[in-house]
Amino acid sequence: MALLITDECINCDVCEPECPNQAISMGAEFYEIDPAKCTECVGHFDEPQCVQVCPVSCIPVNPAHVETRMTLWQKYQGLQRAAGLAEADIKPVPADLPADLPADS
Ligand code: SF4
Ligand code: SF4
Image (cartoon, rainbow, N blue to C red; front, side):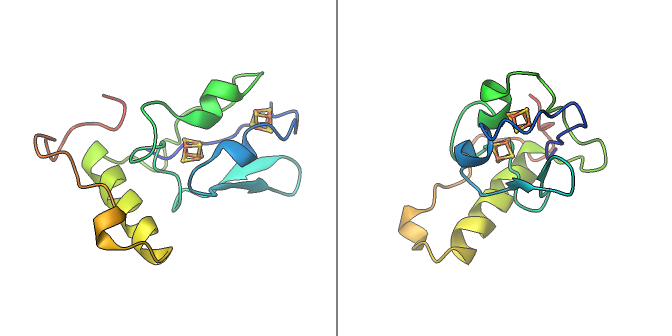
């Protein structure tokens, strides 16, 4: 799943620069996550970086964007291609990754 920032956000600005996908931006009242860009940090880190740094723990999973881990890997690859990276510089999907593994596994 993509993640979601709730209205408990205190606009501390800490998470935005940590996102490897530039998925976080300031919204009308508090920060927002673009679900089309959030891979739960798959492809970059073992854990969601925004969740790691948020001081008020206001970044749960987004139930409106249920995705498998495979889908998150494919989203990561698509974002990298869109950014102009060469294929050789884009990490491959792990060979043993089940197609239906939930994102939070
Ligand atoms: Fe960005 Fe990772 Fe947070 Fe998603 S989980 S918004 S990719 S830092
Ligand atoms: Fe809001 Fe948490 Fe991001 Fe700070 S780290 S801006 S509180 S979501």
